[in-house]
Amino acid sequence: MIFLNIVLNIVMALKDKYGSWAVIAGSAEGLGEAWSRALAQKGMNLIMVDHQEEKLLSLSEMLRQEYKVEAIAIHIDLRAQDAYKKIMEHCKGPEIRLLIYNAAFSRIKPFIAHTDEELDSFIGINTHTQLRLVHSFSKHLIHHNKGGGIILMSSLAGLIGMQLVAPYAATKSFAWNLAEGISHELKSHHIDVMACIAGATSTPAYLKTNPQYGNLKPLVMKPDDVVEAALKKLGHKNLFIPGFSNRFNYWILTRLLPRKMASRLANNTMKKMYAHLSD
Image (cartoon, rainbow, N blue to C red; front, side, top):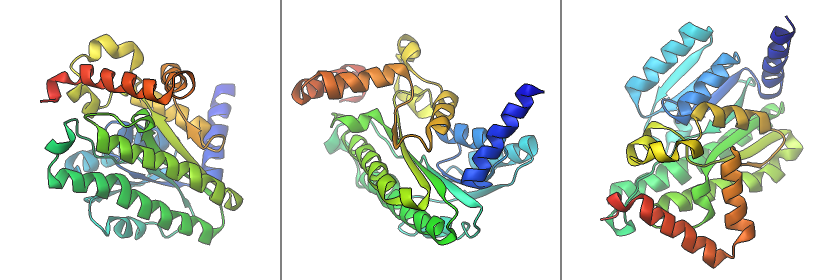
């Protein structure tokens, strides 16, 4: 009974502060699926956005059945210039007060090997739509004057420019700096903004490009663990790095080593890890 009361109090505190609806951009697999499950489990209704239609529809139906919540599935190409407008069409009420921007495009390859379509995806998904959606959602929250929360999923890759993931790393630095900056501006409106700076996480995309996962398993976090840790820190931090090993790596690269040495270490590590993808 005591445990049940604790759980109910946590759920109610989340909904009281951030409303009964959450928007999750990039919600169908990996960290996005973990976000969808975690919030549905806590009783929040969802506006789920993703380009993977089959996975999106399947997951949204499963969450409706299992957790008895509403789950609106929006199948959309987040590269589109007006994608944020289509999402905001569903964000009309005062109870929609939490936004998770998890969507990201990533490719591991030499910079000059990227196609025009890939470069457009980096810009469209990782920067343009994220910026426009966060801007529009912030105005939505201020209009309703009930506070809210915004979480931008970033990455330790944004710490240092790294070969083979240079465009991705640059866009993750963008998310990091965007969250940190606007957190100070929106604080007076009772809007909590946080960048969750994840390290290696066992998502389908990560496992696909890391055949050496077995050797790295102790250092790789599970999506569910990243999400639960981030939820606990929302409202307390504007930058959060989940996982002890990730925080240790951050300390080494930003506090212990000079920038030049940290860059050399990070880039040599990338070259060794992805030698099979660097040709």
